Image (cartoon, rainbow over all chains, first blue to last red; front, side, top):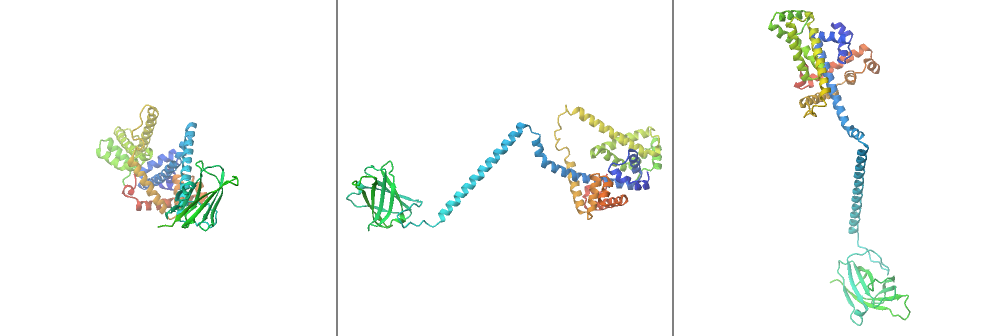
Length: 243
Length: 197
């Protein structure tokens, strides 16, 4: 084999990609013992091919890692599939619960923060009042205790937001009561209709502290549906201002 | 680089048969370039190639001393044929051994990492090749090199896609290989800096 033949028949390029016949290959390889130029050329060609193969095998290895998990799944049995599916569902469900819990707690925190930073609730000027209350002060008022004596004095702390008046009934003959709160001038400040007594024969009435200015107050309790001759109950108390 | 032309081959055979030790050394110097390249090509492994090279040289000298080379001027063909046959025998022995022993032999203890150095060199070769391919300024060079030498696509198909005549394709491939080699010689570390082989 000589150089014109190698050049004309593209022996070198065909040799590198294995496209020579056995006879051509044997003759060309025999030629390499005698030709430094061709030997140099095939060495570089082989180095080039090895470099390209190295790149290809590395890329293939990376791709194999990516699809390896799915290949692993494909090879699993039905029971293993079911187990993997159950595990996956459990993980997803736990994730959903966790996320929803976090979101709900975050919403509650935001709500509490908004409530804490909001201005205090203005006391209603009318007799009806049903705003939410907190910082409750509890005072029991009884007809027996207050009869013929000094009215109960209530000193409200500034940090109290509401006052719970527990109106004690001597007897609980009625199922519904009407409670009227009047100030010293006789002006009705609040009235509650259709109030139900507790099992302990008391009627709880909650009033905002800001609703009670210092002074005397009178509470009248009248049983609804009772005979007209049955007298109502009257209780008095006095609100002292802050020290 | 010294080579082994037909005239010098016949002379070397005669001197070796005559018992001249220096002729054996000269034979090895003249043939080792091509013979190492061929054993590397036949085995696809550096370690196996070295073993095959040593085995070929030893058997060749033994046969030359014994006067078994019938056409001394075709010593190159004799050496090439010897290496090819020995390489084929090694491959068959290895295949037979793998078929018969796989069921009884335990797995090699380090089968997952058979050759750490080889892996490192492989990675370095890939890195260098990526760099050179990226630096090739003619995009067609990359396409031609990858399609012909890696994908081993038929040259006719590449010619059709790139609208090249076969003669033009041959020149394009040659120039791409030359540009790749220039960049290789500039970028390659010492490990790959010299002509491989």
